[in-house]
Length: 333
Image (cartoon, rainbow, N blue to C red):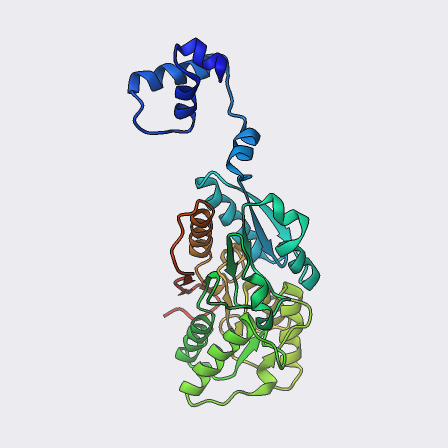
């Protein structure tokens, strides 16, 4: 910086002001400094800058896994949104482990980031005090709600209800649901199951337990195939399927077609999350867009404002907009 100042004929403070994009610098002075920077090949020492500011320029994204397309695509969108704020992202999959989620909140890795985007699945509502921390944190997902913490989430109940209502509107009455919660569970699966049940109740239909399939090992494609197999082997043939994510829907469609059932003629299928897979299945997958891009953008913006000390006075609870994206796996209107 001293060399740049000498080359441009200005003070070191002026060079610092230009580098940090401070206002009220004469245009001709800024141009002279920038030219000197280019000619000398000067680069800002980010480490020194961060040490002075007490920040690292890093934020953490804690998610259960990256094998699920939803979380992988969310991570991509978080990285892109963070880049616009001059931030870099450290991604930490926890493997659905309570210990890993606790380590993300209080372990040594937490100390290298300025703030955290945290999507817990192993911690429970009773652990809400654990996320009420003294550093910038934005909750994602539906496992824990706390009025003391910023939270960006989606309209799970409304999305699942809309998916079920779409099938009901096409005259489907034996609608299977894949990914239903086990007894005592809570979070995403519970909210989506409530939406499914609400739609059936509003249509005057009772829940047929033979059509309700849960998954023990996560919401992966293979589990979707196993879940629909269990439904078919229960003695009832569904004419519609609401899967609680796109991966389950993809696995279910594969199994249905292997068994000679046509999608959507015999069985119409709706997924959830609008991942890239949905555009390339055969037929293409009707799905619920829960607002993943909005979630990433709003959460990163909120976290960046908290880190900079410019956040809202009160904690924010933001629900992203949702919509049903109709494609080939449901009848065309």
